[in-house]
Image 1 (cartoon, one colour):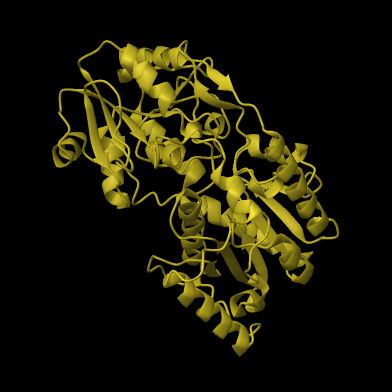
Image 2 (image 1 turned 180 degrees about the vertical axis):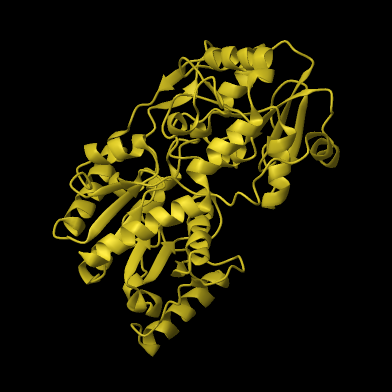
Length: 424
């Protein structure tokens, strides 16, 4: 059984989830390979797509090089931006990524595709070309959904709010005429590309995504399997609390709230809600420990420790172990890797009752879910946790996470699905 996993990059949350599945499959002796549009990491059996120029004549190639030389020399003006580029440029700041259903890549031309028995698509934005791929594809396809883009008009999350008012409530988002027009156009392209496809199977990571798929016009009739992401439990495990704090220069006598995000300007990540909640929290014994890009400084009150971006997973397990609680203020989310990582390290989680977070966080057992999606509700849950933090059993949190999210659990579920499909 030869499985080809396909992902655009080998960095980012979806990429990590894809590569962890690849690791789990290899551990179970499955012939797994990963095809990437761009490869940056040295990971066993991962390959960058090799785009051939055979379709271009020598005259075309020389012409393109000549035009490039003229532009570099300032003799020729830069080409005008396409309609797609202009649209993306003028989108509201803070919105999640938007991508189109077309690309210049032909995944079916790869020898890795040709030798595989099953194609397992993951996050393939700007890599998968819907029309050409599904018209040429002859293999069973399992599509693991890391966000809503495969069945949306281009948005990766259909965000309902943008910004936060003074009372801590989200400001309803208004879709522009252009957004609606382009979204409808992209949905039509996807529907037409998939209308005659019979060998497509969907994997969702949580109940919320399963329900969203069933409501979509594009994928609602496809068979759905719910398989949560897996994680290496040997890497993400509880570390000694005080030793971890010493390594990270975190005070031993403080209550530590952990926040992890690649970008605090991304509206969906909800940092504005956490910032507002912490500004209202009157407790000098509490510090916020923040992990993520420091391109934009955290504009918040005192008691913040910024650790910057951390890419080493073992070091990240020490960060979770050093924290008393991990807070994820995402307004929409699928099955965040950060929550899995925290629970696997035995650290409780506080979050809004959205998406896959409700699958992972059991209120009062391994964390707390807020009553509403507001900054005041988040503050209430943080205060409630700080008053009762000793009641959360970190060993039990770890044990339950092992049962649900260990790599082997995920790999076994995929192997069972792959075997069923090949029998059909």
